[in-house]
Length: 112
Image (cartoon, rainbow, N blue to C red):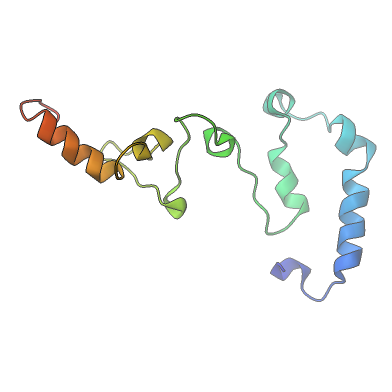
């Protein structure tokens, strides 16, 4: 359990959370930002649940090959300063193996 909830009754915490999530504002919106209206995800909800995080954008979708892989989940930052994407892990090996294969197949290219 999160340090913010230390010494509190878990049942009481759950009842407060349920009441908050069951409120009219939570169901119909708090008059949030444009991104909240478009995505349906309120990033500010994390403040109501200490220790929680809200992930949005390509990191949250999990769909396609464009998802960014955070370093803490096994991703890396490439030489251009960009995070690895899901497509970097398709096929044999990881990004390093793909680079080695590319270098072997394209020895005269400028980007090798």
